[in-house]
Length: 433
Image 1 (cartoon, rainbow, N blue to C red):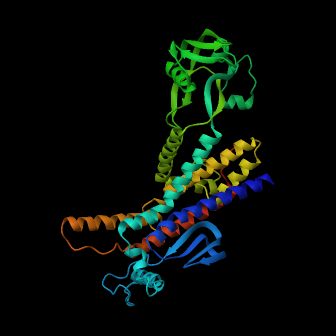
Image 2 (image 1 turned 90 degrees about the vertical axis):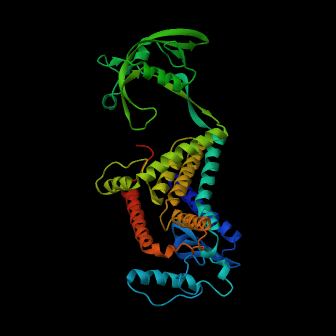
Image 3 (image 1 turned 30 degrees about the vertical axis):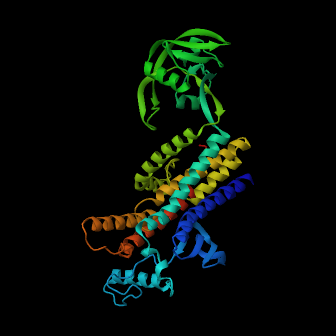
């Protein structure tokens, strides 16, 4: 029951994020006088709607996004009257473009000529189309702030939590977690470190934080080293003999560093509330990481394909669909973690999804928001160049010419969404194992 509840809560959180993304478009569009005929969450047949003024607000049955319908998204043919389109077309692509123009123009009623989107100044177009991603970024920042400043996060301290008696590889530990006489004693145990000790220096260098202690130990390499600790309020120096191990880099995830120093202690974790600076750092780091993932999106989709049809392990940092997101929500709700931890994890994941949605929509390809933003910026650049060179003001950027490519990209996006849904069903991403 808790699993289903978690799916429902996370699903509605995502739908609320999509709804607010569209509000980010709706508000500036109305402020700039663009006529908005529809505000919809979802696609397909309408589940519920209500008209207020000139805009119909509603929810549709397919929860894979949302949209607002603004009149006059496509400009008429430059050679024609602004309120008329020629019916003659040559070639299938030209016919497709002109048919799209016809459909767009049908929404323009008498008196709406100055309320069409394409006639607005380029900077207003950019603001309207950037409003959706901007809303996602604001939501992500607020949600991360709630987690970091309200709930707090686990911080590793230099107080020792546990000291293993021996050193085992993962395979050896899986086979037999108990230490035997054949196993090498851990340097920490051999040196006499105990749970509760606080590491204050390594090789005579002060280490007030766990990260500094870890870097000092790893950087020392194999060999004898003096470990300064406090035990029961008393300063004690222990002599340990570090061993060399291959460990994952502290700075580059996935990179293995060879022969770093190893002591063999686990730190104590405490929950600490963070300041606004930590929220900004979190946003910056995750934005950089997410942008890097988007740059490798085709490669990651190959991984999704292999996971779906070849049974390969699913990449936890790879793309997931709405079904996978819902399953993660169910997994969180069904876990044995304290309620406060569950809520914080829900909020943190929702913040991450908003960040990803915002960045994805900024990709400069139609039909994404980034494609329209690019068109608006290009129009502004052309007009600025014309002013500087004293040339006639150029017409509006005709995004209708990009419709064949737009439809192709939309088709690919539908295929990718279907692949993600299938992979989320047969080989989902799991938080635990």
